[in-house]
Image 1: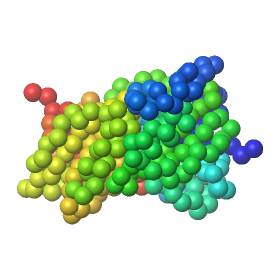
Image 2: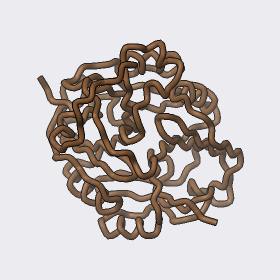
Image 3: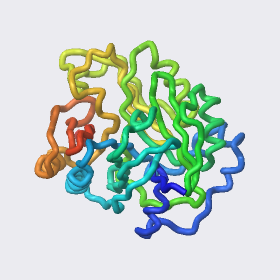
Image 4: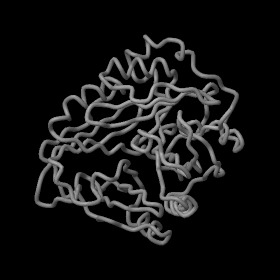
Length: 308
């Protein structure tokens, strides 16, 4: 049997003392209940992982820079097959106070459509998650497949936003995060209504704010405006930027935003660890923010909250 690690961290985490003998919640056998509310299928934001595909050979540098910037720990690197078709990748899980990352350094070509999914979400039941996705208008683009510790699938929300769902036979136990990371989604006006209808239904999310003319300096366009929608749900936080697609690099390349206590301090740590500040820092939308590229190519937004 092939080892699998894509959002299936149980074999690694068990060796680091992160798991208990806890079994999957009883709701795993009640998909019709889960369809009515995303809170029945979401397990916790500390189990949502950003999927990071680094350039070949750069995993050690990326992991070192990430931990030097944010703190945290990592699992040992393993070489595994993480897709339903034959492939091979080095894989590592990074735990940090601001978010959990699943990192891949593929040794073979990456099978389609893997590499395009932004996150992995742990669900209490794979059948419930798939039923809920379809009921919300999302498409199942990779059907559920077995792995040694559970099942995986990939769904796509309207607008082309891909997310992996995963389920463990034995439930993992990770520490809660200090701050919840944000999915950063960029959409054209033509797609935003369909996306929100599907996304809010699947996640049981609520719109925290919807600003039709937000200051676009926060997406690299000073003097312009854009529509910014902030969503909260049992699956975490999401920022939807509705634009005409005329975005300067690197905006649109960052799929996750991370909240820190002090942006200036964090950027100093990142630069000392080998990361590059691509944009910012600048103040807009109630926060100071910057976009940073880490060794291996991963691009992230980092922000703190403006006080006073």
